[in-house]
Image (cartoon, rainbow, N blue to C red; front, side):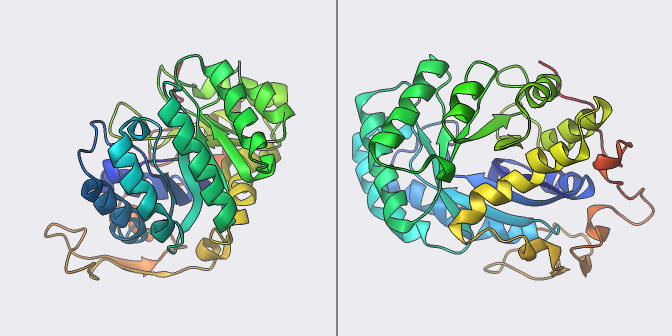
Length: 326
């Protein structure tokens, strides 16, 4: 079993869900983030948050995958002060919804005064609600931005073990792990980490508090990044235990602290019926609805197609597991 603890499935297709299920992904976490262009009003943000706790949760379950999310004001849109103030007012209502496992993804982008203000406010919101935090680290001046992020969290008295600092690389991970935080690594073509580099990180630093994710979104990205990396780890001689921790168990340890991310949600199978509707809407477009048990994987492929095998066996699955480079 695998977990992708950072993927933006609202931007992905039903084919992605089918392939992820076939490769062994049983649960995902979708962080609130920006949509590629700025939202112009708080109503657009409210509709988006509603979809994370509603429609997308339903859509994932239609393919046998459990969907969770994090709720927050992202750092890019924190720079729109009028929008940010309205969004901050609605966050407490959404942060207590079913399936919410953290405040996030929050932190810094350009490391502006407004980003700092709203990051600090959301740290206090997480403290008030007893929720973990998922942190977005800046793309520019990443190392100093990551160190500053941890300084601010500790200034607010937030427990490092309740935080996942995401989008790490070889320059930041030692700082993050040495200070007791969970270190997320996004396997993202060209701009963050590749599967091969991730293997080297695990060889050097081990698997404690290390979390692999895809951050798949509306850009060039890969929702199969976690199973591809798990398969490559096996080929590179990384132990099954380390693969299990970095691609499954550590996400449960981190986000299970919310009280809303329970392994029983997916290990105890649930019925899947694609004939059911959400507010009158279906995931299908004329196809015959499938029914089955989430644990069987039958919904991941059409009749006559090859069923997937576990990537932990180091074998080829019914989906492409070519490692992600760069």
